[in-house]
Length: 168
Image (cartoon, rainbow, N blue to C red; front, side, top):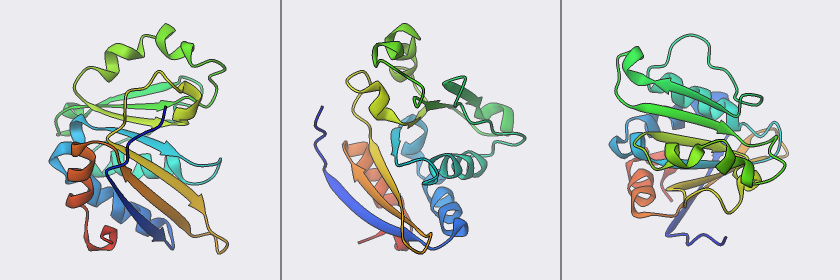
C-alpha cells in the first residue's frame, strides 16, 4: 500500500534526551490519544525507546515492557491519572500479515485509543492508514535521524502541535 503523505518533517536527535523532549511535546497534543502511529527503523534505531518515553510522558508508571513476544501491550491511562488507552504493538515476529487479522487486532484499531505499531511492514496491507509514520535511522555519529510523515489531517495537526525543534 502506498501512503499519501500530506506533510513531512525531518529531525535529528543528538542524544536520548532529545528523543525524550520530542515524546513530551507529542504527549501534549490532544489529538494523540486517538492517533495511530507507525514506527519504522532497523533494530536498535530507537523505536521502543521512543515509545517508552512517550508512555512516561503520558503518565505510565512502573515497568514498560516491549511487546516483542506478546505482540501487544496495553496501557489504561486512567490507572496512571490520565485518560484513554494506549496499545503498543510489535509485529517483528509476524511471518504473515494475516496473523494480524487472526489475532483480533482489527477491533482494537477501530476503537478509540492511541495505537503505536513497531515493524508495521510485517502486517502490511492489514493496518489502517496511520496518522503519522515515523522513520528512525542511526546516523554515523550514533545520533538519530527522524522523518515524520503525516498521512491524515490528524497527523498534520499532530505535527503542528510539536515544539519549535520539530518545525521545518
